[in-house]
Every structure is written in C-alpha cells, then in structure tokens.
Image (cartoon, rainbow, N blue to C red):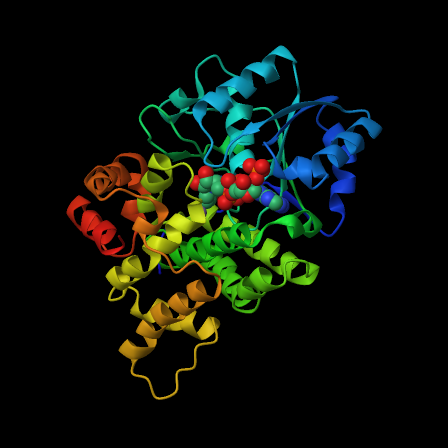
Length: 386
Ligand code: NDP
Ligand code: MN
C-alpha cells in the first residue's frame, strides 16, 4: 500500500432495490424524450424485462428505439451500427440493459454517437463527450453498471481491449436483483467468479489504495456467503441482491485500481474465442496466476483467506497464504468452473500469440500486476493453465 497520489472520482448515481426498474421512465425522462435501448439477442426478451422497460419508458413519455443485437463479448461492428442508429434517430439517451456486454456497448455507443469516427479509433483519440447513459444490469459480474470501462472486440484482428474515459461514466445505474433471477447456473457462476477476480486484482495490484481496498473487503465478505449459494438457489432474491452489491462494489474497486494479469490474459482468450464467457476464461487462469503472485501477495492472500472464512488453525504464514489458492479451487469446483483452457476449446498453438496480445491490448493491466510479468512468463502461465 502507500501510493502517494490517490485520485477518487465516481459520479454514478446508484439505485439499488427489487423492482427498481419501475423507476426507469422517470429517471430516463430527466435526460431525454428519446432513448436507445441497447441489449442482447435473447435473455431480456425471454424474461419479459425488455417489454417491461419499453412500457415503463412509454408511460413516462420517453420514446424507445431498440437495438437488440449485442452479442456476448461484443464487436465493434455492433457498436458502430448501433451508434449510427442513435444518430439517425437523434436519441438523447442510451440505456444499456443486460450483462456486461450490452452495458459496455452502451458506453461505447454513447461515445461513437457523438463523434464522427469509428469506435475503434477512440482507443487512440480520447473522447471528451458522450450521450448520457443509464445502465440496467442483469448479471452480477462485470461491475460495468457503475464504472467507465468498455471492452470491445475487433473481429478482424481478434483484439479485445478495454477503454474508459471520464465522459463514459453512466449517469445512473439501476440495480434490480429481480432482473438477475433468470440467470442460468452457468452465467451465475461465470459472472460471479468475475466479481472475485476483480477484487482479487484490485486489492493486490500496484494501483491499490485505501478506497478501493475498502470496497474489496466488503466484497470478499459478500462473496464468502453468497457466490456458491447464488449458484444453488437461483430464485433466492436476498442472495441475488448480495451478489448484485458485490458486483457493483467490485466495479467501483476496479474503476479506482484496475485489474491485473488474470484479466490481461483472459481478454485474448475471449477475444479469439468469442463463445468463451469472460468469467470462465478467468476461472481457467486464476489458479496458476495466483501461484505466480503468491510471494508478492503473501500478506494480502492471508487477509483474503481470513475474509473468505478460511481457518488459520496452526498454519504457518506460507501455508495460510497458500490456503487461499486451495479455497478458490474448492469454490470453483462448487460452481462447476474448475476448468482448463483446453476445456474452453482454446488451441495450444494459439498460446504464444495470446501471450503477446495480453501486453499489446491489456498492457496497463499486466503492469498493474503485483509481481512483474513479461511475455515469456505470460506464455508460461497460459501453458500451465492449458
Ligand atoms: P454477458 O453480458 O456477455 O452475458 C452472458 C450471457 O448471459 C448472454 O448469453 C446473455 O444473454 C445472458 N444473460 C445476461 N443476463 C441474463 C439474465 N438475467 N437472465 C438470463 N440470461 C442472461 O456477460 P457478462 O455480464 O459476463 O459480460 C461480459 C463482458 O463484459 C465481456 O465482454 C467482458 O470482457 C466485459 N467486462 C467488462 C468489465 C467492465 O469493467 N466494464 C469488467 C469485466 C468484464 P443475451 O445475450 O441474450 O442478453
Ligand atoms: Mn472481469
């Protein structure tokens, strides 16, 4: 710890509570009379949430335009297409409805709809203005509902970078646990594990600070009691609510302190294999990455183990720190995510390219990792996780 310069800023107004989506019309109306709803292809239609949102908006005098073609691990083609529609229809507001993929997209669309360049170019050209964004989150995972980040894939090059400018913060986030109850077990597991990796990496990373650590510690407590239960009791709204809080707190933590090597390595995985769920990619990489970071994170791992309820009982410091890795393996088994990269369909000969990409597109995350890591070591981690 002990960073000398700490900059804390997060302007997102957070509304949390069961049924809160009913307020979406009133909230949207503050910003515009026309909104582009950005969502995925199936889940929000099937659960009835999209239809409900449309009605809520219309009742409040907000005219909704729907873009429902966002795929998991969204592409820049989808984002540019939606931005074109936002311009044509002259919408004054973007509403992201869904998991991290639609929410990330909504922020990128908000930027691209204001400018005249393809969204990919904003990786190099900083954006200073964006349409206002409201997020209505349906997974408990990415934290995208409350942070400024957007992750997008270039389908030609398979690069999957993240970016985030101050103008991309959502204005308001609606966190309504009832919307999350329809998540199937695999999505609950993968997105829930994403939360753990966010706090693991924010809590141990070089850019950690007292503010993000506070978010992380509360998140560890919430994960201890709720991650596995959410998997086993999908309709328990109290547990869904706790996971939703964990997701948001972890989202605030990474907004302040970033992620590390696990995320840097995962983006090339789901960038090259878009059918891989982000959280599943993380699950395949976490154990070897934690072993790699063990020496640098001994005290932190002990603290996290304590927060997750691991008994110390006569263990030496080294043993107690290592017991966190065993705890995580146990947790992964309980949610059926004890997997390897080959289980996700990754081809072995692609690993060297992926090690390179981790630094090309996620260099800031690799640099934030507690233990120094270079391309050669990154490749070793990928191979050990295969
Ligand atoms: P997605 O948004 O990709 O959704 C995964 C799947 O779950 C989709 O098939 C989706 O269906 C379905 N789904 C979502 N919500 C529900 C629900 N309530 N009920 C039933 N099915 C549901 O998953 P994530 O939330 O994990 O987002 C992943 C993306 O976020 C990745 O691109 C990742 O890189 C990025 N990310 C962003 C971060 C940030 O800080 N901004 C941090 C970490 C990851 P459908 O497609 O039909 O909607
Ligand atoms: Mn993540």
